[in-house]
Image 1 (cartoon, rainbow, N blue to C red):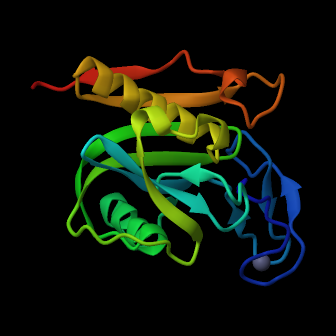
Image 2: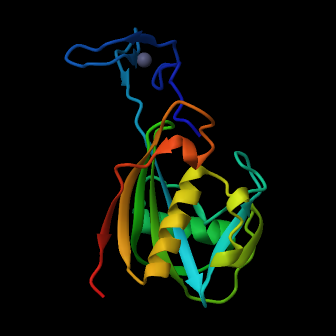
Length: 205
Ligand code: ZN
């Protein structure tokens, strides 16, 4: 979901005027009646990577966008919720999986659509998993079974690639990067993004 451009005042409901508020440097929706400035800011998505016996748990999405495609459990952070708590809640909702958050794994900026994704490594606390209301199915995949051609979003592919690299090298790392679309080719393909500002911090064993 791209963060929508506000059209009507959230306080009065009347149509906003697009103008640069005094002291600012960009156009905002400003209410001509009450003066409320409507800021448009990125949304936070939180999710989990759950591993067990060399496999990872993925969900096949039952909702648009990317319905029918695979992703780790993830979704939008709610108000009054920590990122770790939100990731655990989304995991319960989408995979009926009870997890404990272990640590941050990757933080990825998606500047094209105005999202920040925080993915955590998480430990499963009970072997019972099942498709939640927003999933068609949940499944364990070994790393050589990952359905790379049927992943839901470029950010999913990047996060899974990074985790696969860490497991192959035996190095535990925390990653930070930005998915910057090159404005050429499909924005749904990771190969059309500049991944150049990736930073990967190696954790002590
Ligand atoms: Zn207003």
